[in-house]
Length: 545
Image (cartoon, rainbow, N blue to C red; front, side):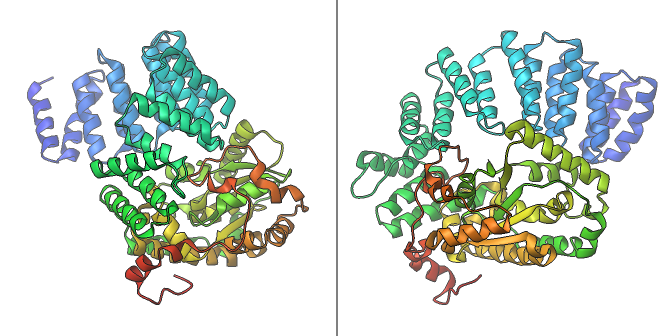
């Protein structure tokens, strides 16, 4: 091969002429299919042109031709993950392991990518093989297994065993203490959570996230926790970490210092606004418009299929009471709480990345395959015993798809005074996927678009969509729950009023709130921050967004 040809291709790539570079290299690869430099050049050109399949194919071939294949495998894995093709990364590692079964690093990497492709059992299998082969820092492997068990696999006992194995190897492993604290917090064991977060801070005094989480497990009313409060204040003065400022804001709120609380929430959200994706109201409105125009009665009628009894899907705005409602239903023997499952956001990102564009071309066969995958994943994690409640607030975007897959599904939408929802969102770190959450005006806009789409689903699904207002649930729980159970085809059960006695794991930021009994007469949170609301929206803040 003339080296000048390769240099010419590299020059074309550097100047953004990827199509010309690919055209130059392709015939050379055909004549010299194993030449690493040509495969590397073609992979780079294909990536620049958005040719995902071509990039993956050339990187796969490159793995077999270089002296350090694991570096290329990792490059391939990271590229596949970025393109929503996690399975392709896993499959590449599996092929490599067929020829190199004794590579502990390859087993570890395979497990890491399998976890991100939601192939959880496969991930644990390869983590175990990495341990058997003597991988360095085995405590990190035990931590990864524990997080899989406590998260998607919902096996808390197994998770605890692996956390303890990690700490048996390295008692000073701060990450294991932190994650063990998370598990205790989710299980409602406040004392254990405090112990674990405290130990993490002893090992890493500058760990502001551990300090924030420790504060979340304490009370600050009537002089409680003064030493910890002082530490929070000092930490927030030194750090811009949003978690720390959110935690300090909640501490101020508990102390009745509402102006100071709001200032902390504002500081935290301003930092996140700089780091999160930009929320574009017009773009979001167009997306809602496309969902409504695609998911029509005619579209749904064309693809409806007979299915067995399906789960109950609980959705709505974040902070509107969906966790509380799922805990109420979890106390009923007919239901098993599945929490905030990732199935639909993950599936849509992988199978319909331009959603809702592309939805109209989905076939009944694909719907059946997706429904089967959902059921199989459910049975692996939760068994076949009771009806699942799938509580993920942002599933409201996918309800048309959900009903196409499960025509018998029942939808429960939680509702709450928009002002309480807005203040609660503003005071909670929801993460980059909820970019609207950092700005009150954007939150208000998002609530309005949510309500517009829910109104469409209500017209489309007729009686299969039930609304539950948070205010009614806390004021008259018996009547509200009775009506909901009747709509879901289940009898009344007195245990629903004692839901706070459950000891199940609740994977949500509101874990401590849902441990309390229902009560009435609570003052709306927005009223405690009324001055900030008036400053943002003026004196006429109305009853709807």
